Length: 395
Image 1 (cartoon, rainbow, N blue to C red):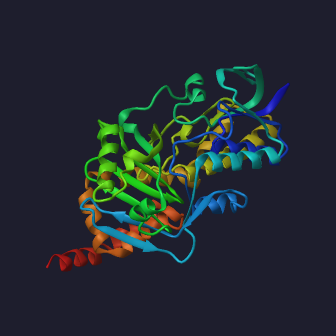
Image 2 (cartoon, rainbow, N blue to C red):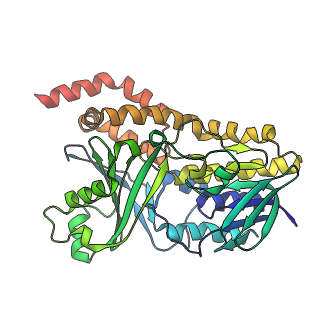
Image 3 (tube, rainbow, N blue to C red):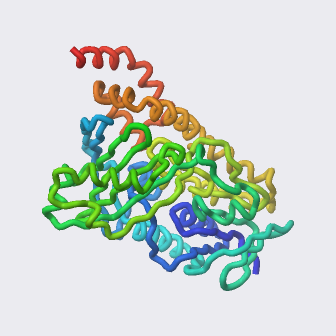
């Protein structure tokens, strides 16, 4: 049997690619190497722009509604903005990913869990995928198997990530009693971000009696990730009766590709989506939105390619063009923004602190209401006002 589409990976990008294909009548099979639901290292922040893509999260429990953010500068000065409407839903990624997979299954996607892909071979008329259990054939293969995925390596789209082209993230789930949560959570409707001089940022996301705490930064800037994470927990725990490091229930590290760089994301009969393609916000490391959107785009391109009986490299180039148009050109702009911001982090924080409009408008970028290019353009036009505010706050 030759399937229309094989999807490798059961995260948001794979689930949405599979669902998109199946909704349009394609015969789709998806492989997930772990038993479902499975743990995933991630803060689990589902932004407003993600909700606009997938609709509501009815039936997903637990989830927590947030309306804004508290951000700490490099000098630990806090900035706060809260919107009237919903900005973020916090989830546990095992629940969120399983929720999306069940939606795909309801559209007749065949989901094979606990089945690891071991080998991929491209032939003129089909792709052959060998798993831990059998061999399968399809007209198109969609690689949604993450930053360390096999699809990119075995189809020669990518061998590895350079230190200057990827980041590292360490995230822990920390369980506290109600008194401990009260000590650490300023407002259960806000996420907390900390920008740390020289290497990156940290976060604290409240999820009931669990805190999702993590750090992220470019690999070349974080020579000792575990030590940096421990220092961040120590900073948060200072003066508190509950020590975060003593209450960790899970902790993992993983690579994050820096979005906005030119990469090979397609070839004959193959497309990469989500983290496997490097689609991640290079400033704050958010990837769920780009995973879902790239999955939808890849699904639509697969439908067209199969209907036109043309799965060649040349035909699938429309996938890259659509990704560029929809989001990747802005990720390229975001990459330049991130390099400037992190190389001048104290100055950037000073501007946000002096001019609250800049801070609020950046949160609108995270919500999907501004692009990075629009944000930078607006900030440059506003620079005389920001400069006057900095000067007036100095005297």
